[in-house]
Length: 503
Image (cartoon, rainbow, N blue to C red; front, side):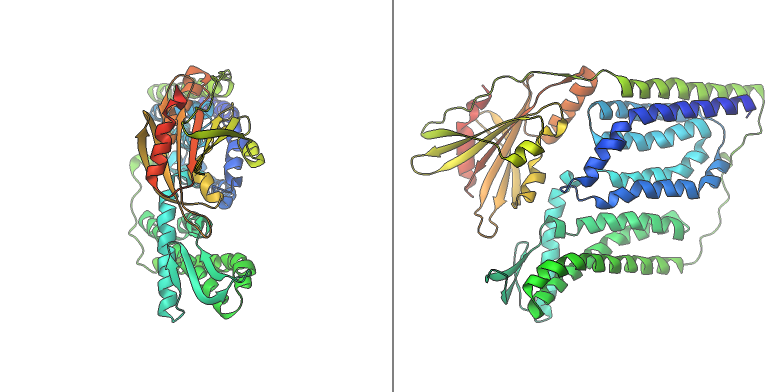
């Protein structure tokens, strides 16, 4: 490549980096730190993932520089869907779209400017950033089954060892052991104790460890797969040890200091097991050396006029596609906020309405939202709560019950969708827990344009479309209903009576 084209390539790369810095500034400075700090996401380990990716890039900088080849117009074309995803994600304030677009652009624009061999070099550190992706809201069902599995195996091991424990759902009770209040000692395997956090953290560690110790991708994949059962087994060992300490020592010590400290010890043991697994894989016969394909070898010697024209066209395409798209993403006008329609709780025959004030926690959590609550109570004492939350400019001004309910101490059971009074509702059975009786919960959404849905995914996609393409923030209203009865028929009757809430 001629010196002029090298200078042009470096200038275009600098322009794309500057435009990307503006386009993704909110993701880097606000959105991802918010996700990492959110208790419901439980992603403390994710703070180290970008550092690890940056360290790999620095460590491999000589190989990356050596792999730099000719520009590719195909890389510029491949970047187009990621540029569109970046626009939608940034304008729609969707961190998952933002992060996926950022990773895709890092690979495709490197391919466009420096060739496919260089893009393959930076693909691994870029893809490591997928561990920064928030997924807690999509793993609630998996978490429930993992908690049941951990509690079943732990209680089985304890009974096999002669400890004689009893299991009910996610709870393990130890007869003869009292808690600090003098009641029967029960360990509740809640969401944080399911082991999901350890699984993701160990998976992230296995990726880096395998990359530097295993010579082939199949062996790296095997080590990555082994990290899941290792983390699950380590968490089971921790649960069993807590029960043993409670029975042999002190229940207060078991669920206090030992509960907190044992997590570090067991995770260290899991890392040791991962190292052992990696050592065993290293003892396998070395793979046969493969010749590097011709198209993977960086070639910069061809200075023929046709090659120069192809290089110049590829660079021009990358600049013409990426820079305007990223600048449009960064500096497009902010979407306009619509005014919500008046809202009133309907009258229900046989029930009196009592307005309730939202809690301080709700007001702080749902910043910018309009919140109103109403309690309905019959003369016979049956009651239910209805809450209305109309979103503000911040997309986080609407919450996801599947994340909030566990943090409030509820165990979520069967979920479903029902139609009542002409309205679609998403339902959640709240199982009895301790002295808390069973209950039923339902929610649905509607916006100012008349769209109604009980699906978070549908609401989010419509909101993203409105913000990014239409340039408006259509205020969504979420209506939730809490019925303190384990009978699903009671919930259905209540929802039937509230059908007029959307008129």
